[in-house]
Length: 328
Image (cartoon, rainbow, N blue to C red):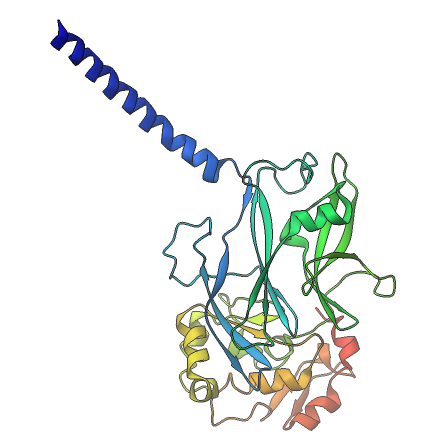
């Protein structure tokens, strides 16, 4: 009788273990992935190098140990949700249980595990020290009757030498929206100054690769076209072995050509000299950037194409930088 009872207990124990195991994985999935309608990976620089007297910065990104992703932590990742200025570079990581724009989202009543974090790196120091800010807390401190909306609507803004990341807020329980500015130095939200008007990007950094004859060199079907950074497509990499960048900054070249690195233009304005200094590195080393360069009419003062042979000639035909920001 005792042996029979022992067998019954063993069978019941095995069945209980099977129930726990089979039910545990779905519970794990729910708690870690499936319950979140919006989520993103968390990244950090795997490696980086400044170029052109710190006018440019090449970064290869990798996932952090806290990331939601499933890939090898040391594997380089394509990461495009970067907002940056001359000094600060910001990334973000998100876990939210509501879809973007769902007005049930309430920053005063967050569900377990929800967050929206912004990581800010300081390019004024060689090692890019990092600070992390809680965007949901910043929103609650600013006005807890609002919640932040998807990153689709963000861009960089500069005002009074401060660098900002635009944030779109929506009324909890409603549909009214407003734009505010996240100060990348303080981690606080601020109103958009009346003098600024609309919080739009006011830099123009894709001058050479869109509106000169270099377009045919850089631009193709698989080119990654970002407005404030540059990523190299495979077809461009295949013709880059004689670039001046490879000779002067071999680490930066390897990051861009082998480690999915992005080149960030460290400026808060349309800086034509900075752009020319950097793009001079992204052509064959025996070639001058302005050697027989065609400048397209979209960016010239008289609206006509011009062939130039020097930086001075280029500047003379180019629209003022205030007008360049209107060219898209």
